[in-house]
Image 1 (cartoon, rainbow, N blue to C red):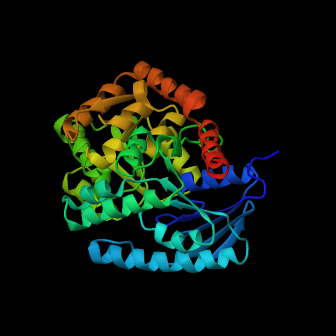
Image 2 (tube, rainbow, N blue to C red):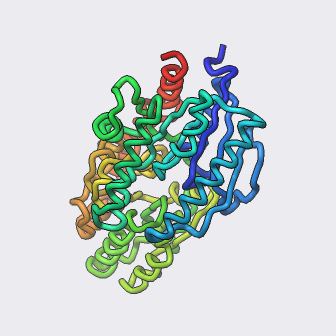
Length: 398
């Protein structure tokens, strides 16, 4: 018998549409497979404009948001609009499909405000801690001011409101316990393990290399804290400083800094060595990463990135790709021997580590095999979803 049969769960996520948000969609389908009736509230996005649709027996309610936030006023407008529509759609869901649980995925740490009225009706609240918002604010704006302290306050209130919390790694679990005051038995680590059914090894597409011998791949959001400037500087060192013109770079993903990064690449004299795809379907993403000889994570070393598990790292490992990244706690836990680790925020060392791997095919093969094996036997989603079920067993059965 399925453990969650008869249970009804409403997932609320603000920053990405479903089913595009891979973690949220994996959680939703895992809960559905265990018997639950699952609904999702999320924003619209490119390719996901329908305000309501059913996908694989999961109901998705979408709402509009103002233009992506930039600055305090922008975030205030975005969060206010999001909270309004999340509450309206939660009421709609309550009187149509119903729900026993609100499962809130941050950022921001404000969704507990939507859940409070429903808690009075006996609904349970689960906090799924995707991002550490105080550290994210510091990474974006470089200060610990009044708004930073407000972030800490909202984080504490979110943890206090939740019956249980879900963490993506050990660092986030410690934050839940130390800053959030959660008891250890009420914090469950559910890593964002990739699905090998989705991330498949396919033949490379040599035309993506633009006639060059090697290709370096990146996938992810292109924002201020993602560190693409370090990759551009590393490419400049490789192409201009070292005179290596046999390497092409491909960056898969979109974000607020995409146009600025393109401009920076041209200014550094390496624009012709880069392909920026923007957000693309899975097939194009798989073609790009499978063609890459080395994959990179140039995320800037800061408290946010040091403590966070980046999906891109495990996606690279799932495709048996060797990795170069800066030396950070959770990135090192995920990749271990599948990665080389450059000195934090040192673009030249990042460049040298990339060249070190490109010039050693046997080492690349061994590192890629190690990473794939680690995903297949330990970190794949089929293992992690068991921890999600344990969290819900605690929620309903104490």
